[in-house]
Length: 394
Ligand SMILES: [Fe+2]
Image 1 (cartoon, helix red, strand yellow):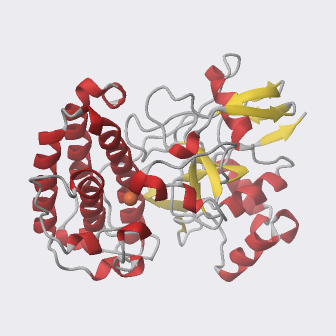
Image 2: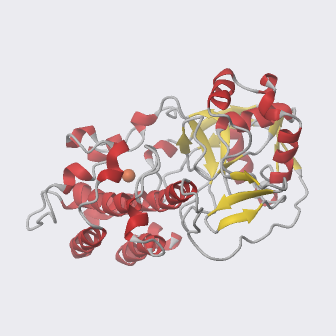
């Protein structure tokens, strides 16, 4: 799929595969499951199914001669945040939309698919179709993170899928030394990238060390056992306030059984906590507190990118199981320009008050990770598959 997304000759095939994968992810869910919205940040699966179709319809099909919208009301219901496209249904109330039904949303998808496949040979549209597919892949990950949160809010703690999670063998922690210096970072323009990944530019790095793998559950448990959640000296002020307010004692989804043993809620239901697996579902605030407790710090996004792309170090770093919080604010790169047209609102307007995460997670769809990819969330967010990697100055 990665190759297909990079080569426009296979774009129609990539379109079919990516759209089908979204429906595969929704496959195990009932119509009632697809209706759930457990918090304002998380959307119903039905909304994701419709909104990803709305994106193709709005960006590519709307206004084209011969295209008839499936339902003109959907422009209001399934616009996410595009001010230029007019008013929209409020995000916290997406779960109130019992109509259209799930069946109608699937018919909407089929309607849009037929229209896109009809125009997919038009090379002038390949850039926007590719953007639509990458957008759909972002929502594929959100389908999993959002249904996980929704199921966790049900006392029955239902499983999204059967089976147990594979256990991880202990992985020794290697510390990789990086010389630093003037380093090129950002996307080079070959193949698809979001606007926020460029332009490629120089970044001055001091010599640093970076861990070869993310922090494990066992390592994070030691932080908890040492009173990490009750010792203000490790915490940023905003983080300490949030941890107190929301009574954080462990990562989101960790459970303590009556006998004191620990488990956690996963997409396969409640599972024993694997000590060797990367810790996941921590906020930036928790990641920063852990790093302070460990006598280290989080890497900047530029240190992270340098380490995973340098020939000397890239084979020594394990990544891709959890998104990794960095110490970098989500800011525009020097010379940043937003996408043209409607997609101008895609990334740039969110560049305040959020932190960058790098890598990718077990929920990221195939072919969607890149060393230059900049994910971003507010520092208190915990429902994404977010973890921790440590770094330090030399
Ligand atoms: Fe979206």
